[in-house]
Structures are given as structure tokens and as C-alpha cells.
Amino acid sequence: MGGPRLTCAIEAARAVVDRLGPTDMFCLLAFDRGVRALFGPGLVDASARAEVHRALFELRPGVGTALLAAVERSHEMLRRVFVRETRPHAIILTDGYPSFGPCDPDSFAAAARKASEEGVVTSAVGIGLDFDENCLGALVAAGGGRYSFVDKESDIPGALARHLSDLFEIACEGATVRVSPAGAVREAALLHRYPTKVSSDGFVVETGPIGRGSPRRLLFTLKCSPAPSPLDKIALTIKSEEREPDRILTVSADPRAPLGPEAERELHRLSLAAREGEFWDSVHRNDRPGADRAHAGSSDAVAALERTGAPAPEVSSDKARLVDQKSVLEGRLSAEAREAARKRSHHTAISRVTSIFDLE
Image (cartoon, rainbow, N blue to C red; front, side, top):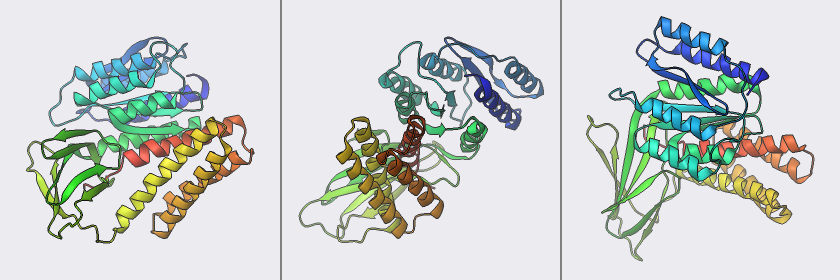
């Protein structure tokens, strides 16, 4: 990373440090073909803040991208620090493909999953058109964090600020939901992509940290015996903090009940994400009929969202991506613009669908 991107990334890092207080633990790493610690882990008092600003001022572009080494080093640094009732969070900024070390998504997923099991969340910001979104996608999906795509370097500070806001507004750490079917309910399936573990009476969903004002939704489908009773239930046990009692909700499993508006919107959102993925896969394979079908499916999903009263800003963003798809089909985008459109769609698939739920 160099030039305006590095300048904006440094500006973003300075803004982060200026927002931290003397009780906040912080670590800053820089990486090219190697990885080096610029600060920490340590508390951010006045002298530490000056030290970080000095290190950022002296930062210069390097050669290469040892991305996995940087991820693993960040996890290693965070493991050195234990602060009760907190969850460490690593945020990776990169604008390049991994050029040193492993470069397959499975390696990134394995590193993030191991850290997640030890309580570390991993998020990522991909900058420009030359980073590997498959590796970042695998990293974030396994790490339980948030993924952002930044097209212009001027948007880097804003993207990092949003990640930081998530950290400062965590309302619940490590929430899990145990799903226990009963009566005529024979099967329950989770439609969102959260880590799950099978238990003796159903399965457990690991939702990760939940931010204030950012509800998360878990959408299930149920299969019942041929003649379900209105008394058939599914139990949801919600566990948030060790010091708080479990919350147990019992929900009727009635296939004749109408679909609620929130559930209907979420089904359309999941459908939209799937159709967008199919569209770009078809474009990659030069499958024009498949791309046309996927675009039509995306249009139907957006129209359905609008009919169900989805928030106008979200629908506007969805419509903008439909315009991107149409431009691709008509051959009106340059290769660079098409790549930017593809990565905007990938951001949606990872961040919107796998990072929202309804447990406030």
C-alpha cells in the first residue's frame, strides 16, 4: 500500500488512536512481505498516543503482502492480553493479494476459526480492486466479524470508523441460541450462515457479539409431522453473559400461521444475496443465460423487499447494484468498474446477510 491509500489508512489509524482512552488496550501492526509491531499491545495513555502517531508518521510503503502472517501475528498479539468481560477484535486493512505465504481461503478460515474459538473476533477492510475477496470473505465468515469493501481511498477512514463504532457499541458478547424442537417438530434448519454445533436436543447457534442498535436476525425453517398440533413448540434458549441468567423463549410451530413481515423481508434478503452470487458466478463462467436468470431473480427479490416495506436506503442500495448488473449484461462497464461492482455485491453477501440478527 502506498500513495493516497497509505495516507488515508494512516489518517484512519490516527483517528482510531485519538478516540481510545487510557483504559483501552490497543495494538498496531504493519505488514508487507514481513510483519512488524508498531505499538503494543498496551494501554493508550497520552505517551502511548504520541508513540503511535510517531510510528505512523514514519511508516513507508513496502513490497509484497504477507496477509496470513499478519492475521496470525495480530491474533498472537491479542492472545497476550487478557481483560475480563471483553472480547479482543482484530481489524485487517489490505489492498493486495497475498503474495507471501499461503493464499488459499481455507488457510485464512482456519486461522480465524482458531482465534474465534479462543475469543478473538476478526474483521477486514478490502481496499480497491486488487485484494483477494475470497480470502477476506473466508477470514470474516470464520472470524465472526465484519467485512467492508472500500472503492476509493478517501472512504478508508469512514470504513474504519464504522468498525470502531461497532466495537464501542457492543451490547452483548458471545451470544448463543440453543434451538430445541419438541412435539411434532422433527427438524429445524438455520437459513443464515452462523457457526452451529449439534446438541443432544437440537443445535446451538453462535451469534458472536451484538451491537447496540444493530439487531441480529436468525431465520429458521421447521419441518413437522403430517398433523402438527397448535401446541407443538420450539424452544430457544438465549445465553449472553456468564453472569446473566439464560432467556428461554417458547415459540409455537404452526405451519398455518401467516409469515411475519420481518421474516418475509429476511427471506427476500437471503434470496437477493443468493441471486447476486449466482449472477457473478455466471458472469465469471461467461454463462449469459445464467446471468440473465440471476439478474431477473435479483430484480424480483428487490421488488419483493420494496413491497414488504424494507427501509428505503437499503432498497436504494439494492437498486444501485441492479443497475451494476444491467450495465455488465449490456457491456457498458470497463473491466475496472465491473470488478468494483462485483466486490460491492460480495460485501453485501458477507456483511449484510451474515452480520444481522434480532436479539436485542
